[in-house]
Length: 215
Ligand SMILES: N[C@@H](CCC(=O)N[C@@H](CS)C(=O)NCC(=O)O)C(=O)O
Image (cartoon, rainbow, N blue to C red; front, side, top):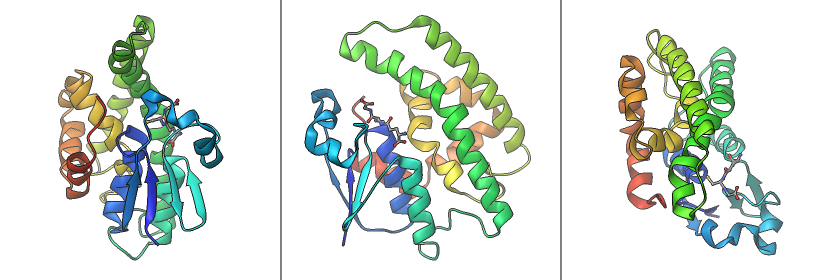
């Protein structure tokens, strides 16, 4: 049974796609047009009651929340493709810690920038300048902490690539390439090297080649 992934062109679903490539799991994608409000239609809300992508369907098993999905597949196929969880429970603990940092420290700031810098002009709604400034400041502080950590280990959870690094790819891409904020990464030597390393993985290159972003 091939895994079905909804909404492949958007950022959060790309977190799932890159994980599936790393884990060598076969999948197919189903398009959902957020701009037309397809994610708020009754049929889609039956799959994802909050009206967000991604959702995966794996046989009769349905799962949403991108980070829950990547944890699920990394565990389910632990011995297939790239190991993304670490070899010991201590390594696993650190992978979880940095996944939480991505979700609660990195993501909200870059998400606000994506909404206000990229999507608001596209949808003809006003950008909130105060939110942009606060998000920039928050991101700088977060990236300073990353710089310190990455001066000691090659990846966030240690000297191994993991879900924690992978989870940064979709919105890291927005940060570096789409919001005019590449300097925030390039001004930090270790963050910059880490970004080059993870964004050059064949799995991520395949995601970018096969599933263009909407902006
Ligand atoms: N916590 C959710 C967030 C998903 C999310 O923000 N999805 C965006 C696309 S990247 C979306 O569906 N936005 C539409 C909306 O919120 O109306 C996850 O990680 O799966």
